[in-house]
Each structure stands twice: as structure tokens, then as C-alpha cells.
Amino acid sequence: MKFDSNLDDFDALGEEHIGTSEDTPMRNDAFKLSNEEKIDIIKDDVRHIMETLGLDLTDDSLSGTPNRVAKMFVKEIFGGLDPSKKPSASTFDNKYKYGEMLVEKNITVYSTCEHHLLPIVGRAHIAYISNGTVVGLSKMNRIVDYFAKRPQVQERLTIQVVRELQDVLNTKDVACVIDAKHLCVNSRGIRDIESSTVTSEFGGKFKDMATRREFLDYIKLDTKF
Image 1 (cartoon, rainbow, N blue to C red):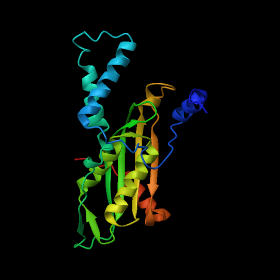
Image 2: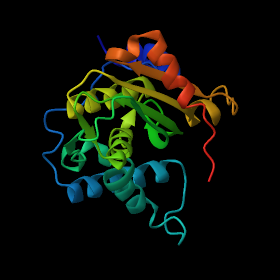
Image 3: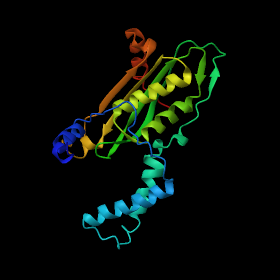
Image 4: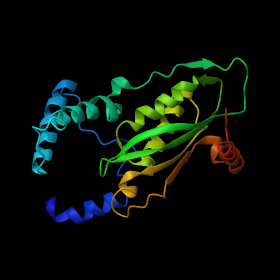
């Protein structure tokens, strides 16, 4: 079956923002090239795109764009594809015996839609109930940032954050809610600038409606300083 014969199907999948797996789709040779080699290749590809669009790359404002975009792709917005950048999340004994829910809310999310390579911008809210260990607060922010820095669908990002914290904390009692705007919806296609997308993943005790309700009530709190 040829790819061209399925273009309508692929377009429809992208427009509906449907993901195909819980894991980010990666080739086995994803890390065969160094970052610098990837930047060199992407730089040429971006230059070709810009020239195809009719842009004059001899202009001072545009001449450095291919290199800037290539470096941004590899070292910044898609840096979460590199497993060496995965944050180390050390855990500590819960010596103070805190047994209630811990919530980290309003974590900034900057990601990229894998269907149109346009930004996803929003907030993540995470909670867990300790089973004897705790994790540093900033590590939860870093875990969100790591999985966000790759081509994503929001559902997968939500699941990946929960799975990672479950592994780190050795507990199923983890929850995550993400509320985000997708520029592939806001700036193109339907161009609805008001809508946002909410996804959630509840594990362990958070599947209980009372516990889930408590978490959702916490993230409604208006924190001001």
C-alpha cells in the first residue's frame, strides 16, 4: 500500500490530534548521529524549505534562520528526545510521615504538536500519595519539561508524566491533569483561539472518586503571593 494513497487518512489523523502509542515513536538508530551532525542536516533541510517558499536567504534577517532553527530543534524544543537529558529524580525517606496528598500545580508546559510542529502551551497539575518515599518538588517540574520537549500529543504527555513518577516513587498513587492550548487549533484550521484541551491520568488511589475530587479541588485554589 503506497503512502500517497493514504494521504487523506494521515491528514484526518492529524486534524483529530490522535496519537498512535503511549511511547514516543522512535527509530532504533535515533542516536546514531551526534547532535552537531543532526544540526548540520536539519539546517540544510530548513534552508531548502525556506528557499522553496521563495524567501531570500541572502537577506541579513533570514541568513541565520536555518542554523537557529536547527539548533533550537536539537538542543531546545526537542531536547526531551535525548535520554541523556532525562532528569535524575532522587527520592528520600518520608521521615516526617506525611501521609496526605502532595500537589504540585500550575507547572508550565511548553510542548510541540507532533502533527503540525506547532506549540502546545499550558499548565500541568500533579499529585501523589507517598508510600514511604518522597521526591524533590522541582523534580516534578523537570519531569514535565523533559517529556514536553519532544513532538507530542497531549494524551501521551499526560500518561508519560504519570508513568515516570510512578516508577520514581514506586507507587501507583499518582495523578496528572494538563490544560493546554494547541496552536495547531488556535492559529490554523478552525482557528479557535478560545478553546483549550484538558487531559487527565489517574493511578492507584486516584481512581477513587473521593480522592480524585480532592485533587481536582486543590488545583482550583487561587494561589497568590
